[in-house]
Amino acid sequence: MTRSQWLLVLAVPVLCAVGWSGVLDRLSTEYLDAALLGSGAVYATARGINALVSVLQGTEVNAFLLTFTVGELLDPVNDLVERFSAVMMVALGALALQKILLVVVSHVSFNILLTALGVLGMLAAVWGTRRQAAIATRLFLVMVVLRFALALVVLANSWVDAVFLKDNEAVQYQAVQGFHGELNAASDLADGSARGLSALDIRQRIAALGDQVSDFAASLINLLMSLVLKSILLPLGFFYLALALLRRLLNFLG
Image (cartoon, rainbow, N blue to C red; front, side, top):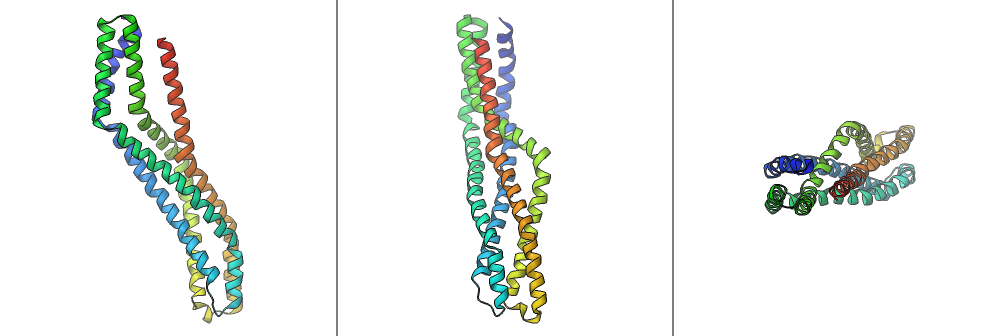
């Protein structure tokens, strides 16, 4: 047997054992669940901000200046959150699709097919002709990619997230939540609690809210780019690398 055939004979039991154990699937599912939960929290916060802005823009209050100044001030926030929500739905859909596909490829039928092709490859490597061994090896490699590529892509994505993205996301999300709290306070004013405040106090609160709009926009955009990166762009990049590796292996086998 050639060196590649020996490697196949050694690799088949290991890969089949990993497939049947489901360890990669469990780790990948845990990350996707956490990513969906975190992304869903960001989306819910953004929609909550959108609802508060709509209330502030459409509520009639005694403090005439307060109502119309806040409404004009928050117009850009409303537009930004609407666009953010649309892209976030795509990002959440991409994460959900990955989870569904992971359930599919981790089904027992894929493990059975992986094992069958592995045994066929080993038999062809030991007793078959060189051409039969090459064909069986190709089939087994394709099956390995189908079975493990998604789980490995998700795990690679989780590593990038933990090392490079997670801390920054936490900071940006905290800033978004802070702005949400400021909007809640402004909503309380619009509900009538501004009666005990002077016009100067109201102006100062409006000015403080306005000062945070640009910081909120920057934090929301950073969050959006981070979520799009880890839910769409990074998985596509890792999938491309997996396919490129498979192509090289198939070319190597002739």
